[in-house]
Length: 373
Image (cartoon, rainbow, N blue to C red; front, side):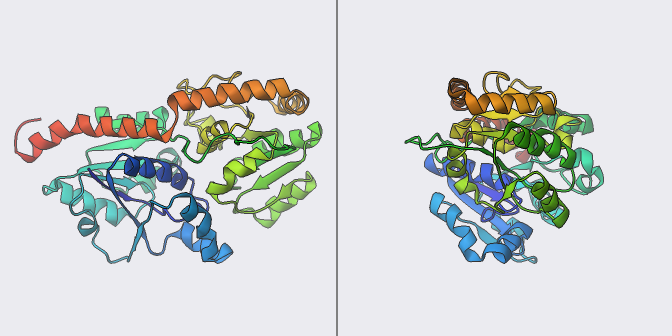
């Protein structure tokens, strides 16, 4: 099967977490013998920021970790239907231009033989519905949504059984516990500051508890403005800037624990959707403590795979326990890794994707032949 994926960027994970999951899934497809072609705009915002901050050297970690992957950068006037020529499956990520989404749909409506899916991995369907309503998905065969609550949003908008929940997952070819355990110390958090979606939560559930428990805190990420860095300094946080996703397992391996602080939309309006860092952290063998988050779909085993803190005081207590109790750390690591390997690897997601495509194909063939569905 030839798979074509239109992404914002495969090259860059600078404030672009979908690249993490995408790399793992595409590499798994290649491993299974499928042909993969990836297209990204030549002016991709994420890539431009990465190059501006770190030069082309910033691409090195990704390219070393994924030698089989590559992408083609296309100009603004490129015809996406030509890029998709010969594909069996075309997937379009939601962070693409409205015109590109519409033109691929128009080609599908006019008889293009590929299966066409829209991949939504963000909260804009509820946080910026006017932006999402600008996408013409009328000729798309379906939607891949990265959480059940997001799938339900699409169902309410008339997609019915043509939306599938397709969670992110860990690329366990790259994210796994260290082969040789070395010294660990302190707490680590890998995440971007963002747009004020969790500013108070970070202080209440990460910066404050780390300081109160006596655990030095290292933070990696981008888009930390001057006022954010002032907050970090107030709590004694060591800020390191951007880290390549491929470097995350080694960063985790140097620390005692990490924390999940969901963005507000994923703890309120779209509960049940974890960030990919949860999958990656558990796969990498680091104990995790979560701020309030409802695992509405039963993806994990709260209390076993990770600890949950109802408030800052409980977070401080959990971190203090992890600091002094190696048996607790080991138990969490073993349980979390067990769940990842059983249910949440990129190989699992490829199995799910292929099953989804297989379920669509009979309908597609009938439609193209002019037969009733």
